[in-house]
Structure formats: structure tokens, C-alpha cells
Image 1 (spheres, rainbow, N blue to C red):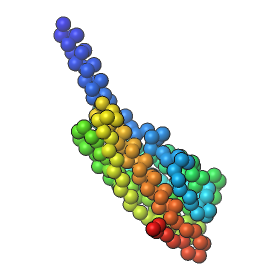
Image 2: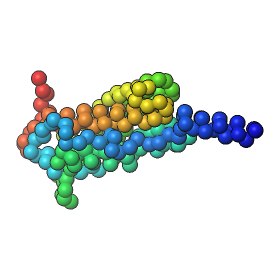
Image 3: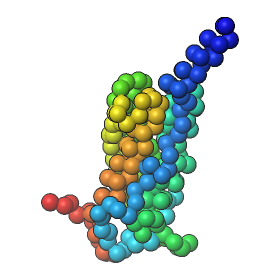
Length: 187
């Protein structure tokens, strides 16, 4: 009888709480459906050099955004918008650093805010074209998923995707002129 009770408690706990899983690439990437246009000088010219600051997920603790997964989502996003370099001589080098990922410990609605620093450098001159920290919140609600660990993973993914989208929006404001590269603000 005790074995049955213990098994039932373990099964109920795993169904209710589950094991944490890392943020999924396919849920963080931005695809070609976004309505953005970019300066021709950025087409097929960006290489992702370094992604850091992410954390691996401990299945017994909380979902995290890992470097490997975030890098794959960033590259996939750039590729879907024809910005990722398709040769060995890219014009620009991009690095991204996950500065902070603010997560709740528990709750019905899980809001995660990611702060990511993006640095875009022109390789030939080592000139910094863009150096920006982007902060992006995203909330996964109880209606999105019953399990708290699932909601947290969804909030991580949503925050990362929103962050990448905001970065791409900044890139869409760049006007490339080899003598003077500037960020144009939209009105």
C-alpha cells in the first residue's frame, strides 16, 4: 500500500511540476513573416561570432536560455531574413551577450525579461556599427500552460524571440554608406 501511495505522489508531482527543459530554438527564432526591410549593405553580410552569458538548464531546477540554443535561434533569424553571411568573407561580425534573464520563482503568470547586448562590428575597419543592450519582457499565462515549468520555458522563449525581433528592428534602421554608417530613427 505504501508503494502505491508513493508512486501516486511521484506521478502526480511530475505531472504537475515536471522537469525543466531548455528554451527551444524553434520558439525563439524570428522568421521571414516579420515585416522588416534592411539596407542592401546588410544582405548576406553578417557572421555571428560569439554568443555568451546564457545558462544550461538543470532539469531539476528551472528552464534557462542556453548559449547554444540562443545562438542557433539568432543565426536562424538572420538567415530567414537574408542577413546571415553565406560565404567565408562576411562584412560584419555580430556578438551577443545575455547580460541578465530575470525570471520569477513561481506564479500563475510567468514574466521573463531578457537583457541582451548586441555588438555589430565592421570587420575590415574594426568599427563598431551598433552596440546596444536590448531589454525585452514576455509573459506566459496560466492559460498558455498548466505546468509552471512549461510556462517558464515559454516565457524564456517569448522573451528571447521578442529580444531578437527588437534587435532586428534596430538593424532595419541602419543605413549603410561606406563613408558614414548611421542609425536612422523612425518617426
